[in-house]
Length: 212
Image (cartoon, rainbow, N blue to C red):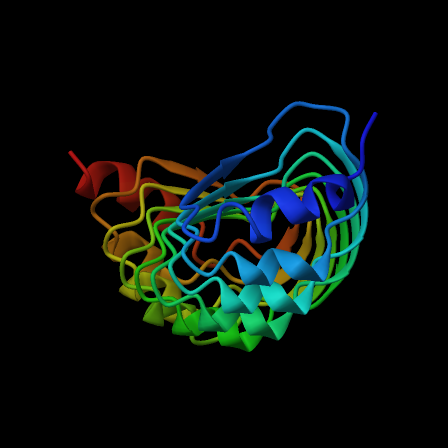
């Protein structure tokens, strides 16, 4: 097994123009070092399926050319850094199956090019940001198996490119917003195992009819 720190010199000194870093499915361990922020031209970062632990470094926000970041299937802890909101070119965020805690940072709403957001199977708490409708490019929203509370925001109906919403196994309450029925592109809607009321349960059926 090797630590990420062992390749510090290799990445920041010898590859200053590196745009693609994929170390997926290895046996790397330790923390993700702060010097990852030195790779300012990085477009693709996949460190998933390793044995990393510790927090997501704040310096991740320096990678302003990123289109994809995958840190899934690890033992990362702590909260999602607010600095992620600086990744203005990001399209894909995969942080699933970690031990991340705290709320979804409001700064994530700055990521208007975001296509996939997968924060599933963590310990994220708080509510789904009320302004989530600002993520106009979003197609996939996976927040299942967390500790999210509160209601499903009405603004979710503004996500007219959504194809999949999975919010299973949280603590969401209130009714299913009728605005979900306005998402014509939606083909997967799973809100199982929450505390939702049934007042607007018919909305779930309108989605499939409207999408035909």
